[in-house]
Length: 511
Image 1 (spheres, rainbow, N blue to C red):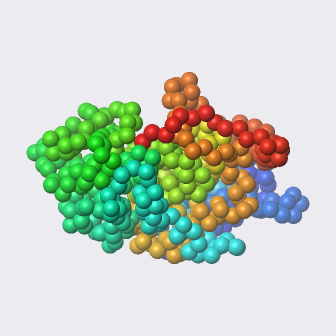
Image 2: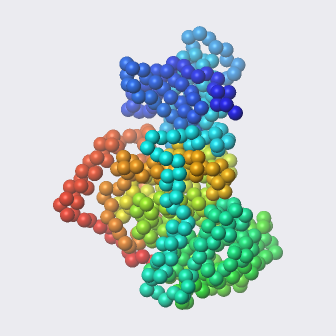
Image 3: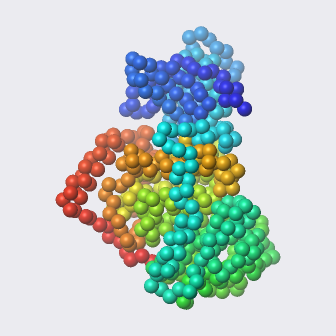
């Protein structure tokens, strides 16, 4: 398919209204294979206004003196039309275009080009920015790197540990045959062989057998994730799956208990049996207790799952690590957390982020789960403003790029799909762009002070706030962000020069 086949009108004269307190732009509007651009002309500014078409969520078109435009309205010389673009990043843009026919053709072009189904025709496969090389930063956060960190923590832990390491890096899923939504390598108990992993995978929905998510060195306990067991109405069992969870407790500190945190309600979990799913039988998993509610962390091992294990499960495991692990609250550690717990863990970004708030339809496979995670992180940063090395700019960037991006990091629904589409060799990594020095100043928290303790946020309703920086950033702009950010940086620099080192109050970390 050629992009030119979808472009009915290449350009037209137009005026762009971008929102309150922003002057309109007038000039030549052009439609390309991936962008909508407006050239104001030399009399105003040499800069182009650019919009990635993938960012368009819905289109509304109307003609001058009419309620809406349709194919039956003839073109009349001197007529004008209006296109309203509602974007995935929550912007609302209005384009007033000369000519009803030109308006219709441009609207059709935008509709077609903003919803291309083929991944390899998306803009990341064509994006070649200066200063970046293909392949950079894709190797920053492989599973092997996290495994080496766990190995070091295991050996340096003051707790008694077996002479051999308790965990191993398994490549049983190297060809994605066990689980298409898992990466090639996963961390599992050393006592469980690959054959047992394969049998456990067949017993779990989508093949998502229990794997290590986080190792808590101070207590020697672990956080695992999986999907629901396929017990069904007959309450089936799997010896290999039971062996895997027994091995987890055996390799943890002496006397460790285990909790299975089911993110579904008890009723939803019970109903899942009718369609082949279900829960772990109490008698089959000694030492493990199943819960559908929050629990006091008490030095226990935790397995988290819901149904598929690709949504609320990842939300819980990633937030737990931010609360407990100081490294996850650094810039590099947060990027590793996103890679490990969302991208490599199989969150289906292509399905979940197909549309945003303005879509006319909302299929079941679309859900703002990742946005919910970012909102939770923002709430955490607001309550502990000194403990996160990254600031609001980082969270806004992740939101924008998860829905529409020139980078390939959030493409596809799994590592298997990214491998088939050659995403890691044919597109640029988002991390290579965000880690450029000129970008870091906008993304870092200038007030950051390393905090080795756990940070326990308040979840009372009065403690939660609307994230105005995201939801109101286009409709209720505060003081220009660049100016405000420069003031914060200056204040922080002056404080550090004077030797001031404020700290957050926090509690002792608990697993």
